[in-house]
Image (spheres, one colour):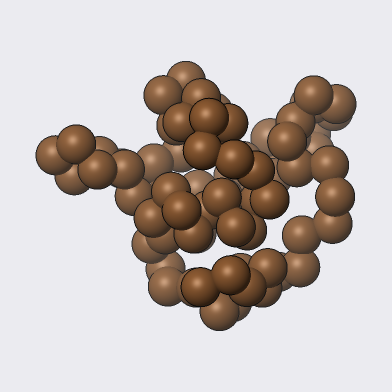
Length: 77
């Protein structure tokens, strides 16, 4: 799925789906997941990102004025 609309995705996203929503690449999503900046759940070796984790990330970026955030363009929710 290549939609930018978050409502088009399931409640729990794969890193690939989150990459599409955030318009970022594999290296950046891995950095966000491994650093804990993007809330996620590990299932074995796999990461899963709850939609609420994306909202938490957006809120954190907004509240802290993270100008170096990869989310610098409008994301349609």
